[in-house]
Image (cartoon, rainbow, N blue to C red; front, side, top):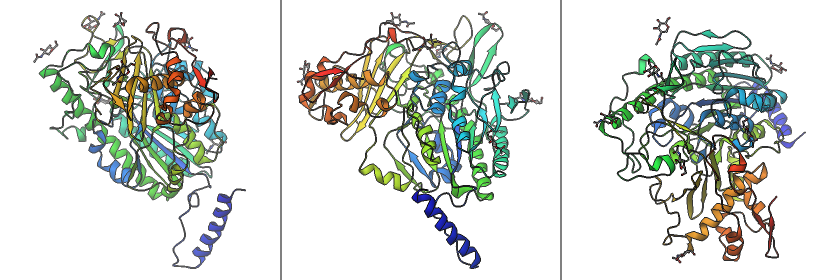
Length: 585
Ligand SMILES: *[C@@H]1O[C@H](CO)[C@@H](O)[C@H](O)[C@H]1NC(C)=O
Ligand SMILES: *[C@@H]1O[C@H](CO)[C@@H](O)[C@H](O)[C@H]1NC(C)=O
Ligand SMILES: *[C@@H]1O[C@H](CO)[C@@H](O)[C@H](O)[C@H]1NC(C)=O
Ligand SMILES: *[C@@H]1O[C@H](CO)[C@@H](O)[C@H](O)[C@H]1NC(C)=O
Ligand SMILES: *[C@@H]1O[C@H](CO)[C@@H](O)[C@H](O)[C@H]1NC(C)=O
Ligand SMILES: *[C@@H]1O[C@H](CO)[C@@H](O)[C@H](O)[C@H]1NC(C)=O
Ligand SMILES: *[C@@H]1O[C@H](CO)[C@@H](O)[C@H](O)[C@H]1NC(C)=O
């Protein structure tokens, strides 16, 4: 029996005592006391394609009141792949996409069938939580290509109750098909997000009837674009998301923020992005209208958040429940001249909302150390007292005051790596293929990217399958407009940028195929002697020759899936304390 458990029992005794002494306020200060067991409950709300950088959260007052003001915002939270299905699979497994090989939204490289084919039905979050004594529920969109034809082939494991939104009507916003437990799919008349809200409240009622702690996953479709399928082509096209009727007249003057990267006069980015022409006046108008539809559609999510919190309050569950709010990936509209979409390594697509409210979580605070979707499964494990799995590519996020306090002595990693394979699908009526009518797709969107955020630096580095490179210094250039790659004049912390790049390249070479601890402590694998834990330390001139000798990342081709044989060198060196180097392992 651990110390916490003893403390709980002591505190429980005190509480019982205080109940007898009428009028005395019981001590609720320790997490776990008030729930049905000492393990906390989890509510996990995940929207689809919601941005942080286009200010969508500013339009959600209930979210601010019930979550931001009562919890902590994780300002540097990232997805590790900026597209729905691969990102959701990373979240559910705690693995980077190169360790799930679910890299796309549809077969052969992704979607629900690929998730099943990779064997994750037996080893993902709900299965593990159930084994640890949780009741688990889910409503809304699960994975892409989870449809009326494959929902039972096989059924997803690990859930006590489900009510899934199914393709092909996942993105209809109205009258979508839902599929409950083992039942047949049914068309549910009504507004999709409102239905998801009602179903999640019903699950909360059901969850409460058990002595086991619960996990409730809530995945509304907003603010994802509406997709329109045509009989003659397999790829749909996308139009504005549809708000609930009660919200369709809101924010009529709202516009995409006109940041420096919005439809700039000069090309920016890399690969297909660098070749885009500037959007014209009517396209910019369209982008603004698309933006308004997104924030209108998020109002029903705002209502959902309030309804869930009020339900928890009514059931007296708030003090033993952690509530997470996030999105599967971010979104861009007009940045670097792009039409609406996602799938890029730029901040709008990867740095996403993450707000946590719960017992011991500081109220009204925000933190800015790096966290990612691969940290979420480890975080839930940690809170539930389940031993972490060695195949997790992330680490628990410090949530409580105590855990945050420990950061002073054991700092977290300062990097984040992002990956992508294949085509970037464009959204909105301004991005249709003239010959087929389906959404336009740009190939050559395969890349590896890296963010490194530490004291005195805030960097973005990428290598595309076209072998273009980008380097942005994000403190002075937060909109990623000045590519510093191989600009001999630039320097960082007094070091020539060429030397900085040699470190970033070696770090990314390891991270692009890392597994487990390599992904969270990569410097320890480059410097097994233990002298280096940060970019700053790696910049020590005594390592110049070592980093100059590392193989550089280079692609042999742009592939649509994960084929390491086309992704250049796979092996780099580790520094030995005697000054020479060997292959890292
Ligand atoms: C949820 O499922 C688990 C695993 O099958 C089971 O042990 C538990 O009793 C179920 N909970 C409820 C409320 O049925
Ligand atoms: C949803 O279905 C109802 C009932 O069939 C119908 O009246 C309504 O027009 C549909 N709504 C949409 C947006 O298709
Ligand atoms: C903008 O470009 C589109 C696509 O080429 C064209 O259809 C539209 O007329 C243009 N609008 C203006 C105002 O130039
Ligand atoms: C598919 O159908 C649409 C609508 O009828 C038409 O505009 C388009 O040209 C067709 N595409 C192909 C590839 O046949
Ligand atoms: C992809 O990049 C390669 C190499 O730069 C180029 O030759 C090819 O035309 C590009 N393909 C597309 C579809 O843009
Ligand atoms: C930085 O290093 C590069 C490559 O060695 C060199 O060409 C450049 O002149 C150096 N820049 C400065 C400011 O020393
Ligand atoms: C990833 O999946 C694809 C499609 O099944 C397969 O062809 C490829 O070999 C896999 N890659 C790896 C590294 O396993």
